[in-house]
Amino acid sequence: MRQALDRLGVDTPGQGFVDITGALSDWVARHGIADGMLTIWCRHTSASLLVQENADPAVRADLQAFLRRLAPEGAAYRHTEEGPDDMPAHIRAALMPTHLCVPVQAERLALGTWQAVYLVEHRRAPHRRELALHLIGE
Amino acid sequence: MRQALDRLGVDTPGQGFVDITGALSDWVARHGIADGMLTIWCRHTSASLLVQENADPAVRADLQAFLRRLAPEGAAYRHTEEGPDDMPAHIRAALMPTHLCVPVQAERLALGTWQAVYLVEHRRAPHRRELALHLIGE
Amino acid sequence: MRQALDRLGVDTPGQGFVDITGALSDWVARHGIADGMLTIWCRHTSASLLVQENADPAVRADLQAFLRRLAPEGAAYRHTEEGPDDMPAHIRAALMPTHLCVPVQAERLALGTWQAVYLVEHRRAPHRRELALHLIGE
Image (cartoon, each protein chain N blue to C red):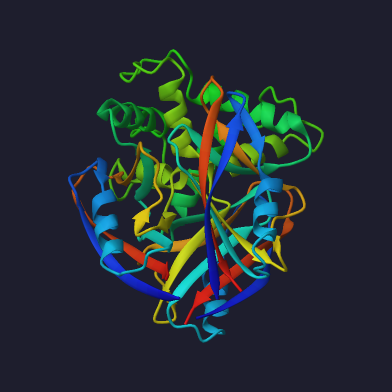
């Protein structure tokens, strides 16, 4: 049994979804661990990791619209110092995963056919986000 | 230290909760790993894994009613090709876990007294869902 | 490769956030495992584990206010036997994590600068909550 740890930087273009499935698969493939488990940890409180459909982009547009209605900018927040999009970002981050643990089988992530892993940026401005990665297996 | 990987099929009767606690406990018991960690990964974007109370069925009915109000069918979605229940299913799946990691102690899942693990089907039609399982320990 | 398992009790003062980052870090430090992964499992269905900002307390106040609006006491619930705050607690617990898996690097949790780990109590009364801990690594 072996393990590998790393950090992975992801640039976001502001609010929206960045598909990181390929970057994660590539990272796993480099370690020669056929079977095991990958943990991805998002080191931020205004960005999330989310599994969603990889086919129709309208799914992500609808999800974004839903999040904007659920935790809108301009509601009566106390925490306003970091801009009108910061507290909604914290709320959305509270409702979506900070981490994912994906089984690895035969050197591949055990994702379903329609699953992609996204880094979800909740802030309006582009950010450099950092993920902590952990892989264990043999 | 050893690990085990598998797939587990779960039939759902359409929208609702399927208790998979027993199936998971049985699977863990078959591997002779006394202490370790079980990861359960749902390979779908319109079904979730959820820990909820195992006692009063009204809790699940209230939760279902809440989800129907939160992400209703018939809202103005762009993604409509797969039926009126599909986009609400994706939204609900974004807000509830795709995976769970449960410590295993003395060959038992370390669940609390009132906890059960449910596969939550978000679509109206019955589905065959597939889970990826990973167990590590000794 | 080694592992450690334990239980950790946390006293809550009723509805709100209890910072458990220090208790988790101390527990990890006691095991002499430099690199690995920590899993924290909340053994309850009316309390959650949440990663949120550790700086401005107004963030937690705004998040609490959001949760009270999202799943209010006094809505038309069927499950009422355990008091008006119980079903809202179950709903909030369905939307926030029951478990977290944090990579450990160089004997430290790989948290971001602004991240703290909170036990979120959803009930109005103080409770003694129990977490199951699992650490694996070397």
